Each structure stands twice: as C-alpha cells, then as structure tokens.
Image 1 (cartoon, one colour):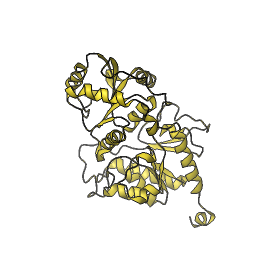
Image 2 (cartoon, rainbow, N blue to C red):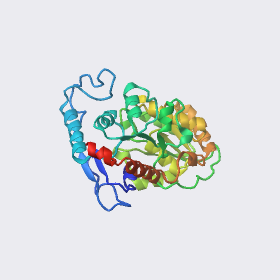
Image 3 (tube, helix red, strand yellow):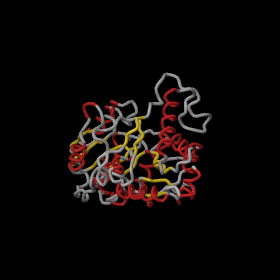
Image 4 (cartoon, one colour):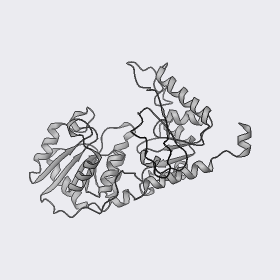
Length: 339
C-alpha cells in the first residue's frame, strides 16, 4: 500500500495498527505528509469469545475493549472528516463498518477461497475491488459481479522489473537463493525445518545455496534482497504476494511453495503460477530427492514468463484508479444537502 500511497493525488489518511514509518509514505506527486491514525490492537488477551459472531464475520471477539476502541475511532474519524472513499486492505469488519456509515469502499481482493459469508458480504458491498494480479490470472470461480467491478492493477513490487535471467545449463552448476518471509525455521509456521533445508542443499552438490529470511540472523535489507535476486540463477520462495512480486520483478526462475495461510491464499497463487507455466508451483515443501528435478524444471522455464505476471506500473495504475474513483464519488449537491 505504501507504493500506491506514494502515487496518489487525492488527500490521504492512513488508518493502521502499525506505527507510522519514518517520514510516512514518501510523496511523489503530493508534498504534504498524510495524516496517520493509529488504531488500537484488537487481538490482545488470552481469551476470545465468539470471535466470528457465529460465522458471520472474521474477528469480532465479544466485549473486547481493543475492538470497541478501534471501531469507535474509525467511526469518529468518518463522522469528523466525511471521507469520499475508504480503501480496505484486509478487514471485512472495517469494510462493513464503513459501508454501514455510508462510505463507499474499495476492497483489496485476496487470492484463495473468499466465498465464506464474511468475505462475500464485504466484496458484495464494495463499490469496487482491486486485485494485485492481472486479468489473465483472474479466479474463474469468482461470481460474475465481482469480476465486473474489479480493477486488475497487477502485482506491485518495490523493484523495477529486470531483463530475464541468463540461460543456465540443466543440471550444471547454479546458484540457489531460498527467500522466505520470516526466517525459515525460526518461525513456527515456516514450511520447512532446518533438516529439510539441509537435505535440499545436499541434493545438489554442484549448486551454491544462500538463504535470506525476514527475521533474526537471516534478515536482509531491501537493497540486499535485490542483489541476491540478481545473484541467483533460481529462487525458492513462499507464495506470498510481496515475495512473488519481487521474484517476478527480478525475472529469476523460481520454485514457489505454498505456506499455510487462511483461505488457501498461497496455495492458490502457487498452483496458478504452476498451471500457467510461469514458475514451478508446489503445495508443500517437497521430499529432498525431488530437488534436482524441481530446480532443473524451474531453470528450464526461465524467467521470461514473469513478464505476464508483473507489469511495469502496477502502483501507478492502482493510484490512478483510486484517484479517479474518489473523484467520481464526491457527493453531489443533492447528496450534500441531505447530510
């Protein structure tokens, strides 16, 4: 969202549980720094009672003070500022609250099965959906009404797309980068263990392996991620949107493995990439003896097909769409007089 925010012309307020980053989102076409409204946490505490409200929502634990303060702050901000449009990243509860208060929403669509009651309500009620994938990779299982109101911005990467990776001989020496989001085995939710990673490395003695994660000793800066992607002949990564977008920008052949996520988001991404011949996609970390074949298969695919997945201007296109949508939703004189 920071990449999109940097391109917006319309005035922006950020509502987030995260602290404001240093200096806020950088301004490109706007000189003013956006207002940053810090939202209280709604996931603290040891006991959460009826968090889904009998399956109608995703996270509304009963009598939770953080949830109550969070929603009250959003409602107060809406009453004070009368926003023209709210872009909702993940929360179906926030999307629902905004629409209940008469504010149109653009909901950032997510891959995976979103046909549960809560998602359907938020997606159905949205003025528009924004997908960070291209129309070529649209989900055929979506209701037609969702397709009709979706803007396909395409994936958004911090990095400028590069030329395709050089050609590597099958089975020859190659450089393998394992790029994970949270430090590999340091994270209880990681898709692999230290032993599995060691087994993978032993399967290719002629290959040089490097590992970069998001925490602990494996944490790397943005510039180093870009360098490592350029260094690698093939990348092994999870199927999170940001990781896949950055690999796509590098145009490096890849094995993309689904990590466990709600609604099968990463599984959908990995299987879509595999079916389209963009990368080798897997539902889970494979047995060690499969790695030589998998890495050779990824190298054989090459990196050129990533151009279908990632365009040059996803953030700019998304920002332009939001600016145009907000401008179209400015209340008319009739609407204004009724409020």
